[in-house]
Image (cartoon, rainbow, N blue to C red; front, side, top):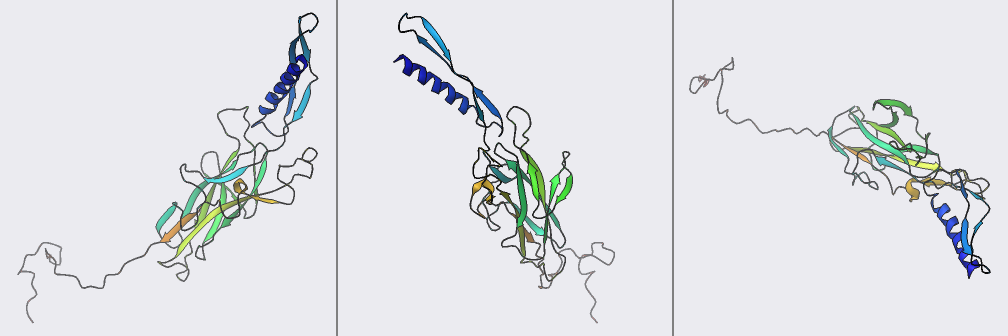
Length: 267
């Protein structure tokens, strides 16, 4: 019975050490040394027994997402269902939407960024830029390029190192053949990560995703976690009905001219 108590205490101590690894950066070494207290079965004297120190290296636990920087707007929408809408746009107009690349795991990731324009009219250009610390537009992110996003370090407070802010810039066409009152434009940033982990994660952990795989945001199916911006075009209305008689006529100088003074004399 005493030996069982000692074994249970040792296992509990080790388990507690493993549990504390949640959120810890990948590659961190955790050390556990268990101590068990028991009574000597011959003398009844309390005894202590200390185990060897066990070292455990935290493995990568990757996860990432692309989200609207403006809070409260959910992902997983399409061009027709997105609540992010610009109306009354005109030829050549530039529409900017802020987004964030979020590393939700414990290991650095390189998020490849592309524009999904499913359902959009042709002719618009979509580009992505980094956002400078002061909020201004920074360097352009070429299509298909990877953006390094570090993992948030739980040991630091006051800042989340796992967030990179970007801005999506949609520029509407100016060609009248490409932009009409019925045109609908839009785009969504689409993030993917290429896996780099080897067959044995203890030997070649990589980024935690299996080598040769391409992983979508939050490990979801393709095109199920997008975040669109929708743009509709200004539609002018032409009234072909003749004007009615003015209620307060004016003369050529714009001064009120009550009838019959302003009535045209018969020819």
